[in-house]
Image 1 (cartoon, rainbow, N blue to C red):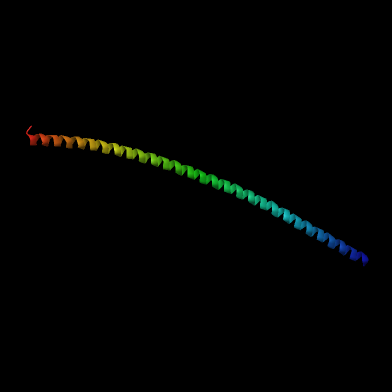
Image 2: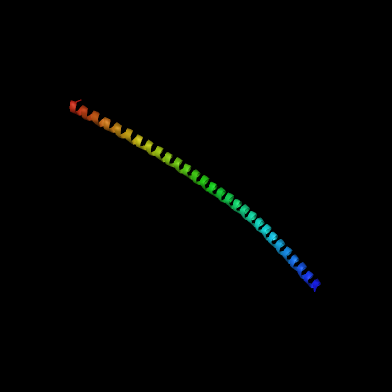
Length: 106
């Protein structure tokens, strides 16, 4: 009977040791998975940041191209208005001179 009790104690001690080892293994596994998760989160954040940077650079480039195109359009329109103004100004000045000459009898 004493021998049976001793075996039970040994079995209980062995089970307790196995349980403690299991908890230690689970804790180590949990830490490992948490580290893997953190690394994956860092990688995904870096990937997302790179994508956002690329998008911003493309948008800035497009905006610069649009701004350049608009500036060229404005310059072209300005030149056209300047030419039109000069042409009309010359006509008006010639008409005024002609009227003055007609009025003064020249």
